[in-house]
Amino acid sequence: MSGPPLGLSAMQLREVIFPPGATRHDWILDATMAGAIGLLTIPPYSMRGLDQHLDVAQMVAAILMVAPVVLRRHSPILMLAGVTVAGVMQLIVSDAPMATLAVVPLVSYTMARWIPGHEARLVVVIGGIASILGPVRWIIDDPTYISLKTLLSLVLAWSVCIGLVITPYAIGRRVREAVAADQDRVEAAEERYQRLLDEREQQARLAESKARSQIARELHDIVAHSLSVMIVQAEGGKAAAAKRPEAAQEALTTIAETGREALSEMRRIVGVLRDEPKSEQVDFAPAPTLNDIAELVERASDRATLDVRGQPPKVPAALALTVYRVVQEALTNFLKHAGPEATAQVTITYGMRDISIDVLDNGAGTGSEESTSPGHGLRGMNERVTSMGGRLLTRSRPSGGFQVTAVLPLRAGQ
Image 1 (cartoon, rainbow, N blue to C red):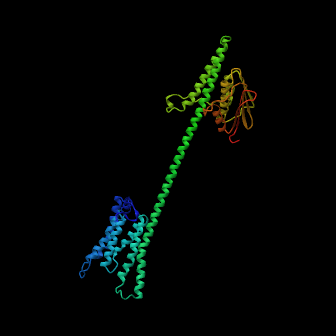
Image 2: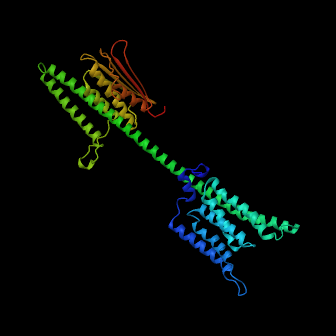
Image 3: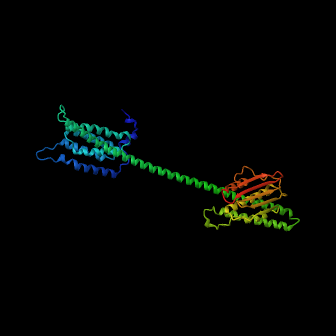
């Protein structure tokens, strides 16, 4: 037969005959073990009395039985082959069990411990055959006559011999399975750890994406509102310049203040994103609060009025910023779409459980933005409100104009 036995590939067969992992330390340990076993078992066959001749065949068989132990970790299969050949030779040259048979349990354990699968059972087959042939060679002197005593001795000898093969084999398999189970646990722990790292990385990416979305909304609200106010003030100042120069001066002052405030807020937001914050002093101005809404409406346009019902409660900074941005975005849409003659009414109601915001105008525009700009305008406003557990209503009014209504709970989950 040209191919390897048992359907194994050449590489698999090589790994069975020469298991990987034998180190220089293993070679030294196995050589030391072989030497120790040899010192304990070989001398009785080399040191005979003056009236006895040295049995060279037994001496050679004893050495051949011990020598393969050197290959214990490097190649258990070759060790089994060498011990098998030496065992057959001992059956021929000796009519009594030799001391070097002490290596048999070691061979059985080694095969079970280091050889995987069905190949390891080869030692049980060979050991079982030897456990029958050995006692027959040692006990039966006359094959033509077997007494009951001889038969009992054979049964006892067979039991002892097969036990010296099966017991170490079972121990070796148990050790191999325990080591494999430990390796499986380690691999499972490593897999869980890697999965945890992947989940943390995914959470970090989600947090980063959320932060980018929030920053985009902040920049949109600041730029869109500020530019809308500046455009309205510029147009109003231009129209009033000829008749009321002081009105044009007031419009220019509002434009300048709005521009400076927008620039300051943009620096605050962008400044925290710099890789080297020490290179430039970052302006950490506080975020807008509920008390800043009145100034926001007054600065936006003289066509917008504010009605506050109730006392502003003490709320988290995120909720206060959301209320501020809703009013800001609603006024931005009013200035962009309602027309130059429209007016707007901003009503804020501070209740026991929630804050209600109503921005109503009587303009002719729709107040809506293009749906192709996700994350901006009304869509960004809706994201802000829903993130705080609130509800948002935006629609055209039947009587004309546009309505923005938001209800925000004072505590999340209400």
